[in-house]
Length: 222
Image 1 (tube, rainbow, N blue to C red):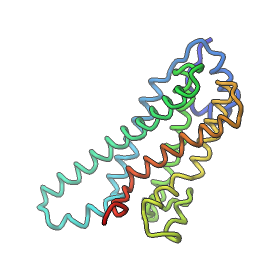
Image 2: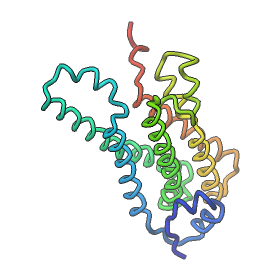
Image 3: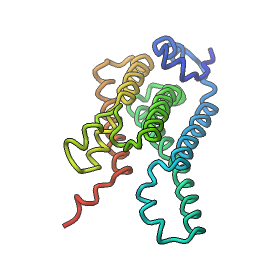
């Protein structure tokens, strides 16, 4: 039996899809879907840079540059957003897939990668929804109403804490659920062990994502 990766079907009917994945002898269409998601990640980053979302800090320093230098800075900013939009999700996707493979060696790596693709789709949906809010209302991405980050400004001025709270969202809960269903079916391990494994791996990734987003330099100042 050949299983063709179909992240949307895996989101809508995870139990059926992952049982089919488990019984499959070969997994196909993983690379094309992966490349497609990379493209959409880059596209979202390009749109964010094009409409000026997240350029507030850059804009403060633009008056001191000439017109040509400003254009170059905007291009470099957009290029950095696009590269980061592809590299960062791919890096975290790879880390989580390899972590689950190391912890559940009896499961085929290709199947674990296929099971992680709907999780990437969830975060693409979340990024698209957040981008619309950023563009329409000038919303700070760390205070997304879809996440606990919305409470960040009421609790502390530390943006690193905001970034940590931002990692707990409706979309991350949805992703955890999909990961747990997939691993429960693919590994036949207890739901308790799978829940602990998924939550720990995702929390570690969320911590490093927060560090990359808002490194707490002030914590290390004397």
